[in-house]
Image (tube, rainbow, N blue to C red; front, top):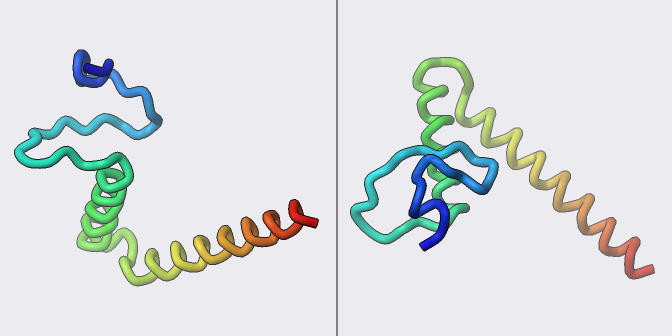
Length: 79
């Protein structure tokens, strides 16, 4: 058992601990975070705080920028 199993309030990573009842297969960290973000965006969109499509467009652009920067960095390291 790891520390998280012994103390549900303890959290070694930087994501906030959200209490949950596991009724099926344990989710991987990235799956859990992705679900939390999607849920948050849906709630904010429903409340009119953000627009889901605009959020998705901005995230897509940001991911593209980061991907390009990493590719250039990799090419630079190879030279």
